[in-house]
Image (cartoon, rainbow, N blue to C red; front, side):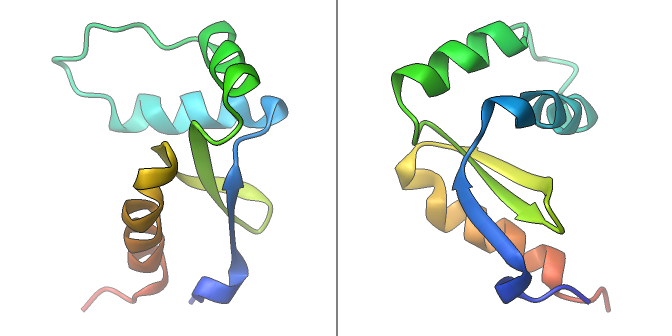
Length: 86
């Protein structure tokens, strides 16, 4: 089981954008109409390094959220990664 201490939460790095997009593709809604691509994300994090945050587990992207206000949500979702299923 993963603990919160094993998670590293911080700004997304450009080399992680592929992993971010892969994660989003898994969770993508059929109603989504906005295309996601690495160029747009690269511009976003270049403009504001805190705009896209990731939780890393074992050095790999495990969760994502937008903006500094999303940190509480990111921690809550990361905590679910560390809680065993009933």
